[in-house]
Length: 487
Image 1 (cartoon, helix red, strand yellow):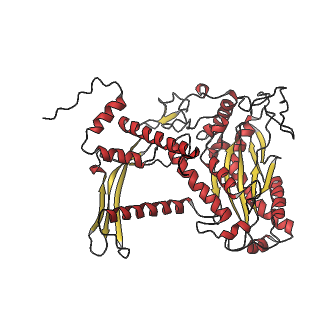
Image 2 (image 1 turned 90 degrees about the vertical axis):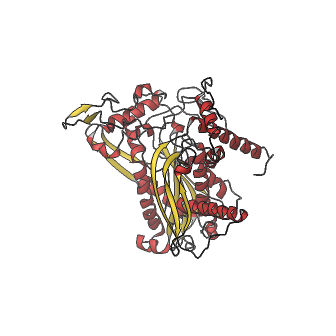
Image 3 (image 1 turned 90 degrees about the horizontal axis):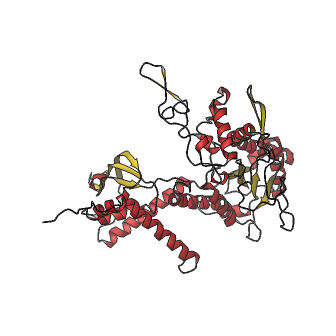
């Protein structure tokens, strides 16, 4: 007679749960599910079913029920792009972003390879100054020069990016700049086309009929807590990447147009509390040529890798937290509506509207002041549409970290479809190896499904298995870097 294991002496909850899983009737399936997640830190737990039938014969081709799993649920990856939340899923997102950007520079993924001959630039747009900050300047020889405070800061000095005089620093202007950065970028793209037409002595209508401007951009936080944008801008013919741009659409024309657009793109924000603020770009911007033959400093692969790296980051570079500070039950208001319709103090945040007190956050003083400023500005009715409570942890920035014009290259969805098709092909290969008949390509299949979200995360024992998967992946990557395994 099989006697259940006595696990009372096992102190570790994870180890105890792992032993229990190991004694299930299908522990191999438990480990298979975890390994298929490739180290995802917070998988989504689903309950439901899916059935695929032949529309002609009504025969069930394949079916799946989460109830048949040893744990009674299906685990799927969280898909979070942020490396601070899920390194595994962010690596997939970074790889997809890399291929998306590179396809727009050198072709592939249904993009014509002739795009590498089009004028292409890597443009960096920065925020203006809101007060002098500690910095680490170097001269032409690479030797560091003293900061405004008189010191020579090391590269990892925590003071870098913080104000020399916090009392005079324009925190309101900095937060509002972050909050409007996405709108400023949209206005820049509009003024870029206008400036290009002006420089070339054409009407905008004539320009549009002869030339298309395609782009992809990513946002990056500076140490001072302000975002700046890196963008790939490309000239195409009127039909997109399949047609060459006209001869007069040169890199020089693009360079001039960027300078004019940077100067002219502006937004004006008015408030009785803080007065008028002009949202504009900083004086420092760069327009670098992307080399077509790989003989320059900026190659297709280098630019794609650079953009992909920052597409998975949040505001870690600014030293802030990666979670919202808004109390969810009261939506940051500090109160909830009771059954009688009157306002009741929110018990979760005790009326502050904050999920955790700003003063208790493990951040430096400069970042805390930016968060506090965003929270205070969020209380002003004229800034309600900015949702600064929700984005206070992002120091006011609420735009997309990466975006592209429609005709730049392929899409992330298309890349995921390719990956899905590859998995289906692998499944068909597995059927063939098992001696099962292959699916008929001419058969029309109909899929019905029903899924319910249960929770996120692993069981304690599954977390131990996932940790082993992450260690195995990291070990394999180290071996590849050292040349002991093929890349």
